[in-house]
Length: 329
Image (cartoon, rainbow, N blue to C red; front, side):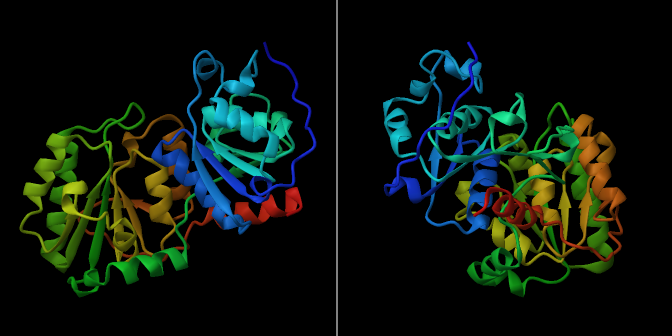
């Protein structure tokens, strides 16, 4: 089924001038592809959600008979005016970037495509994936848009958080996963640690949960923090998602230990980050958390949350500079 794809001459039309960010629409994948595309500064940036049809969905990123039609007729027709640069994140996007490369695009693939990296111009993976190669760039954690400008914009859009009592503790909660088991009792222990620390230092809590957080747990957290000074965004019913403001106005950040993306974005700020019971994490997630603890960027959550000096972890800008240099943009 697999065969080599030879780059073709690239069209010079309007679509060819774009930087295309491709993903399957999953929030973490879309965010990484878009963040890198915009950090490169190669305008215009266009984003596209793709979904391969069977059987190509199961084969991706392998090429097979009719692969050019894996994403439908529109994508197949656009191969004739392939963009100068395509950035994909996730296995489905890895098939799309391979097809675009065969039609003249330079292509960058984010996350391990589970195939020899030579099929892409560059492959970007977290270092805990242990993928190595001449065209592989390793990162600590995930790519994202969080930098000084992004944080300043978050503060500007959500200025009311400035009036909350300090220290402002932003709390980012995810959900149980096979790499970090968490039950309801674990989330209530996070709340208890926050309560104990507030007894000593006062302040406010800016709480948010992810799409993965169970509905019943969201309701329990809403009740638990109802009388605590601060803000709670636990779903669309609470209005506009203030995530950028929560990070921008934070004096410190608390994270559950279940998400590389969430912890990576917290660590891109300039404030201390505390991770709840990091020993719960397993496998590659544990390797990532251990790396951050060894660097002194995070500490385990306790009821004191002693302040410490930090250097923000900002891999996106570093990777963007390397991509520009390697690909000659």
